[in-house]
Image 1 (cartoon, rainbow, N blue to C red):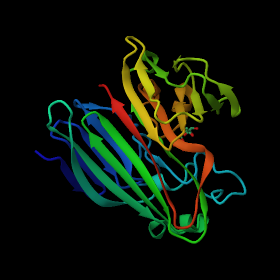
Image 2: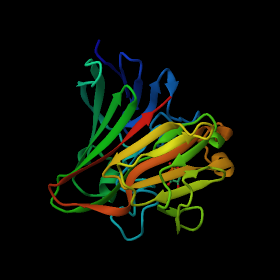
Image 3: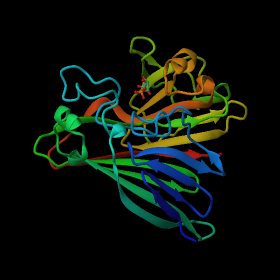
Length: 303
Ligand code: TA6
């Protein structure tokens, strides 16, 4: 049996015969659901706007060409926080399914890949005015039996170089934030946005989240997984590896900030999510005219 892909007005859904499924909104090319073993792996706020009126609060919003509040006196200065990719209308470019031979059984291990495109010609007038570069983005979402992979290809189709940052703002679903630990960050340098963006070194081999947390861990080895592990048995719940993404942001709004976001609901839902966000955000990538660049993540789920 083959994967199935269904297209409903602004939503693309794909599922594998082994039961996994993924849902992507064309708005922002935002993954809003990833199910395996019948369980939702991503957090989506009950109050998320799904009508294109504002970026979706949950799933995997795509951050490009700037992470966070844009800097002053920069080509991105007039863009909204996290740039325009997550609040633009993308187009579905198509699907492909592949069969990678499994070592032991020799039976094909199915994967389905969905491609989405956004180019400068599709941007709103306002965004094109504020960031006037000719670019093309191809965002690929690949569903396999035990993982979800998201990759972004950035192409400079103009005559001027441009600088960009990119990040996959992944909201992971956790049963209880107090029962997980984040591993793979030990001895890494991070910028702590809850402490005036000061720089620190991570001492913990297994970070627990007990307050508002907003940290940009830098210069990680992309092939070393960042693991969301169970505090009870230390087993991995999620394991994230990256390509060309050397930074990982860890964010939980905690009580006050959760209450303060109108589209974050229910208020206590900060206990059921952790954002572990892979990207290239601590410096700027310069893309020369005519060049292209690619980066991405693979999120494995044990659940
Ligand atoms: O995930 C890190 C972060 O930059 C936090 O500082 C917080 O602002 C979060 O993104 C959500 O940003 P948003 O613009 O989606 O409300």
